[in-house]
Length: 413
Image 1 (cartoon, helix red, strand yellow):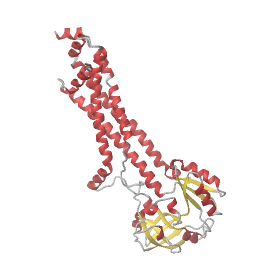
Image 2 (cartoon, helix red, strand yellow; image 1 turned 60 degrees about the vertical axis):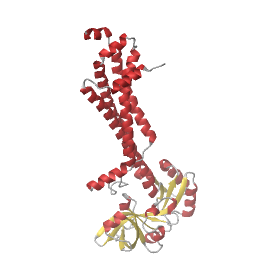
Image 3 (cartoon, rainbow, N blue to C red; image 1 turned 90 degrees about the horizontal axis):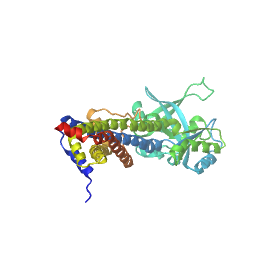
Image 4 (cartoon, one colour; image 1 turned 90 degrees about the vertical axis):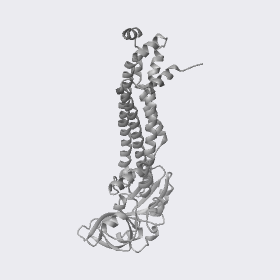
């Protein structure tokens, strides 16, 4: 009957109490170090995955993937340009818009804001803003009513409620700098709440009202929704080149792409830094095994005199170190999975406990800490940690196989 002796003895050594208590302490420290590194790496990667998912599903759901704006005036033939853009391969939807930058005034309170004048009938083709509007949808923007929909944060800063009136102050048109700013009376039709910085920086009105205010015949922008968001800039350029108007071409990558790049950079740095943490924990395995070899020299000498080969002796200590690595990796993976799956709730509980939010919606595009666990990443991290722990056993195992029985047994007498 085949008996893997190296495995049997290695596991016995792993579970046996050490004469030197310091060896036991270092052994436990190595397991806990690997567990901590694996758990933190899994939680960190899940957080970065969560930010990436929130960026795609929340921010990119409420801002157009790409935009085409005329250099001068408005589109000469808006309907034809819209149709061409919507029919372009890779484009899911298109909708016209007019962008205004101005000041909103309510009594003594003023707020700088970007107002997006949209066509209610087609805006859902490019964004999902309507689902965040409280008490209704785009039908609240009635043509000719000079109605506006504001973010909850902006409305709170202006101390205004739905149904109240406010003043929109627009700068003079280009070439009319000596004229007084234009003042338009608006009515707050509804509020939207997306839970991020857009609540504080964006407002919506009907495109026909904006045309009337600015004296425009047509829209000066077309918003696009595309299939591949990471390819939005290239696709927007191709669509823009296919149209006859002179256009400014931009996408979410030019305005918000730094967020995506930051997420990718932090994710890469986390791999490097936290794998170094695991590597330090693996050095504890080296220390444990070196001390274990010194402690077991007599046992090694006896095994050699009984015919144990060098590879069997190496196998014993590789098994002993790999056992610590396996326990540490699996324990870290279980802790990491639990924390990653419950991270958002845990952070909310801590925020309620201390009365402070870690992420402010005024600064970040979300006001909660997201988490998305990807099990393939858990497997990769766990396997890498285990392999690193096995590799750290090579030197002590090699050292154990070079023990001379005559010297050790002679010394014992």
